[in-house]
Every structure is written in structure tokens, then in C-alpha cells.
Image (cartoon, rainbow, N blue to C red; front, top):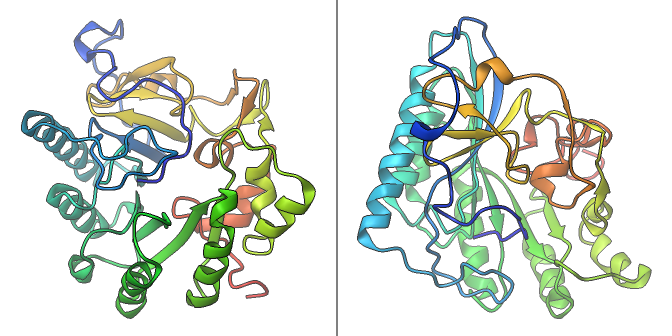
Length: 318
């Protein structure tokens, strides 16, 4: 998976909806344009990245069944929003690798075909087969792909990218900015299609010199946003109003990093608490968090490509 150094509870460490002190279902008649970041209990991954605590983790059959049931419930809820006036943009951010599981592939395909879904995307290492994407509406579906040197050969990874190109899939590719991966990232950029944006996530805990940062910025002109954590305390953020985090039990929070519960997706109790909010944390250092800060120009930079991390004007000058 794409490990982003995300804080917060580990898989399964969520409150039960039955114990949450929220009221009975509320009126949902007011239509909303919502972006939902979904993360169910899946934690297994087929890669062994040294910077990821979930590498090579195995879920038991019971855990996989629970994840499948949770995902299907979420997809069913999203499907049923048709006719309510709601429009949805969905990003799946699993702890593990989702696309090696049939229920994630099926959900993405089915959700992509729904007219009230603006975008459906997932973070993936692209170790899965790609033929299933031909069944999706590729005007709606997109992929956020991470290349992990040492886990897959560059030739094998690039072959998968070329399959995406042939299918017409919209996607970005990224790497974690480990110093030992810079040369490999340069080779990757040279061989990727020009139309594919290559992003770089700053390695967690690494303080880059200006010279080191310049090397990564040659590959990703927007690396500066990842290099430093962004002051966020008291600053307006779209999370909690139009952007929400949802776990496998339907517990709704403003984002993956603020643990306060807003309600539950399935009884509608979250809707009464959707409102503009300032960030309560001192800093935000993860792309899927700070991209929603109103103090940064990232909605203008990414436009409709916010979820899959594709800038509006890419290739540069495009």
C-alpha cells in the first residue's frame, strides 16, 4: 500500500456505532456534495516496505470476510444516495493493498458507473491485474499508484503502467523520497509516459537539505508541499464540512488524523454536524490531510484531480 505515515488508531480500533451517543436518524433532505475517505479493517499487504508497519501483514479469513462485508455495506450506502441529490467523490485509503481483493475491484467498477459519483479512486501499489478496469467508467474511476523500489522491478511496474495507458486509465504515480531511491525515481520518470504525474512524498522524519530537496523537486515540481509540515491550528479546512473520513463500521470523523467522532454514516447522525471547522491540530504533514486546508492553493492546483493527485495543468504547461 501507500504508507503515508498516517497517525490514528490501528485497524479495528474503532468505536461501535451502538455505543455512540448520537441521536436517531436525522433529516437527510438537504443535498450535499461530499468527499469521503474510506478505510475499512483490511490491513494485509503483499509488499514488505521497510517504511510501512503493515508490510507483509496477513489478515485471517475472518478478518477478510469482515472487511468485505464492511466495504459492501459502504458501497451499498453510496449506491443508495442516488436520487437524494447528494453527489459523492470517494477515495479508498486502505491500510493494506485493496486491489488484490475482488470486492475492491468490483466496488470500484460498480460505483464508477453511477451518475451521482463524481470520482472513485484508490491508493494502490498496482500489484493486481489490470484487465478488470475495462469494465469501469474511466471518466469516473482513477488510481493513486505508488512505486516501491525493492518490492517490484521497474520493468514489471512500468509494464503495468503501460497497461493503464492502453486502457485509458487516469492515474498518478509516486514514490517515497528515500535518499537511496532517488536514482531509481529518476529512471522511473524518464520511462513513464509524459502525461503521468510523478509525485514524491517526503520520507517520514527526514529533514531534507535544500540540495537534497532540489533533487526531488526536479522530478516533482510540487515536492515543496510535502517537504515541510503545514501549520494548521485554527486554520479553515474543508474536512468536517464537505470532506469526511469513514471507517468500516460507518463511524464518521472529519479526517483520518482528528479522532473526534461526528456521527455514523448509516444512521445519518453525522449530517447534523457538517459545518465549517478550523483544524484543531498544530500541523498537518500528510497529503490526504493538508490538501484540504483552505490556506493552501491545492484545490486550484489539482482541480478535479484532488483524489487521484493529478494536477490540472499536467504535463507542465499543459
